[in-house]
Image: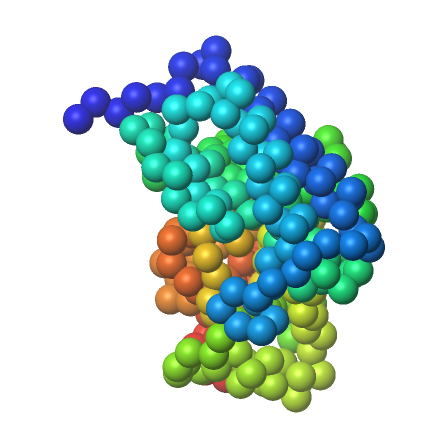
Length: 269
């Protein structure tokens, strides 16, 4: 099979479309924030979807289809919109829906662009904090046009951590609560923001030193994990294997505390 690469002249168009689509989704979120909108539940009572999620998704789709109508799309609300294309857009129109529904401004649009199974671009936009993160494979990571780097903290016990908890509780050998309890008992700072995409971006820009989560979907981390890597960080699954957004567990760090964090999430205290 011949793999069709994106022609060089289309790469600027791809980037421009990604930035425009991410901004379009953010504009919709701003329109609805702290206003009146419909809220329903999905897998559990607190796994929410709002009118803003759906309308932001529509705005994003419209921008993408204007320039790349043939591309594959995977989105949280619509699922797979398959196409005969080696380029896939992986979209979370509103990451942090519970925060959004409660008027908490820690939420964002997250869009990753994958080609032939490799993430090549990612954008995460929190319009309420005016923070736009972007990364392109091999070109570094940026926050509002300023290049960013992960932290340089090398001592695990001094690291500032962030995590998230699943809406539905599965069977875990070392559960999210056990790991969280370990850090708390050590007197170590651990935060829970409620947006995986923002967690990753805040690792990328050095606000957090490490992030771990037991149960993620592709749209939660597709953009953010590339942003961490392009900022000089390291992202793997819980076993230390190369990260793929199509599996559930994730560890993202500045690279310096990565191995100790792998041990901790696997119960090796």
